[in-house]
Length: 528
Image (cartoon, rainbow, N blue to C red; front, side, top):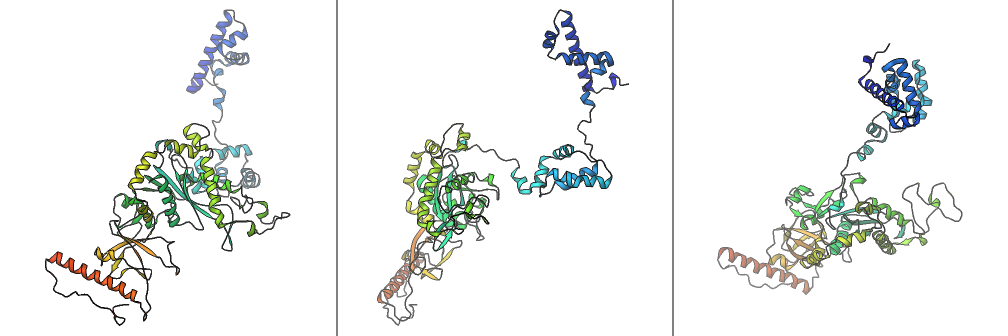
């Protein structure tokens, strides 16, 4: 027989509480309350009060204890072997259905061990007792586990327009016709962190560091320089032209940029932009990626050429094995957009995005019908931007965005040797740069008819602009013109004068070596 002292603390507390309620109920009845009124006063129904009264009369205080506490308290009736079987068969990345495992494997497993199997509901309950993190890791994989890790809760109200900007590449979901081929265009674009406004974009066949620089230039010209750039982890965003070159000739790290330890300064350190690189293969790390869905949905409006976001989203006539009456399997180039039409279509896509209601902004600012354009215009400091424009030369900014070579080049008397050509300007000799090393920038699109770079722009190690050096033409070995001789003669004259003046300045001695003008002829062997 169970005694009151054998009960747990919880069971005794429940019994004492119920006894007090019965005493309160009986007192109300003795004072003239009806059954319904007394039950309403104590807060329990008549069947419950009657059940407690019978239990107290038959078993005393032990009868008022909570019967539920006598159950198994959630302990599984599955054996250890059955549990191990459950874990081994369900915690795999094949993600098998539990009902299939229970019906087709578990029952056979129990029969082989002569053990009594549990029901599917008990089998499922045991599976649900497995910690969620374990199920994610071993059923969905390490990437899904990493994506479900704790994350920073960002409050973009704490930044202002152009404090932080994002950039990424996105391939558009439609085909266009270009150079006799069907291709899918790419877009490199920049977004403001505060307002989610698309600041600039550039259409390209293949995204690279050039499209990053040019699209960044467009954004900076329109809205000024940002404080930070939140970027994709791709190597084109970590190029030497953007980050600079360290003393070892490699891409400068963020620490080297911030501590000004770069041998060749890139765009970010020159413009004092702090680069932040997103975690690789983590879409949550890049707030710009959710906007890609809107851009992709805009592509659905095209009447022809849309490819779908994935194999399941393809139009019916493009799906393998599906025949649609009146539709050819191969895309008709005559119905596709031409490459020249793509920029106008992309402009409409991004301008529509900027003017469209943004659910993220509505949640961020706890408002309705907010658009990226409206939020940006409301907070952007145009007065500060106008002040910045007066301090920056547009030409200098354009030159800064040109491609930078990842090494320095030595200045020779004939100029700088780059890609099997010489580039020369008199300022190289006048500024006594001969023998020194310079940083080289150029515009990849600035080419002559032979495909050679027409002009390069030279800077010293501190980033100070020296000059723009045009391509020095090559002469016929035996038929150099008078103009060719005059050009070489001018360079030699400048070199002699600079040499004499510098020697006199450092020694105080007037050179005695005759440096008279020399005449040149076609037989002059110094002309190569």
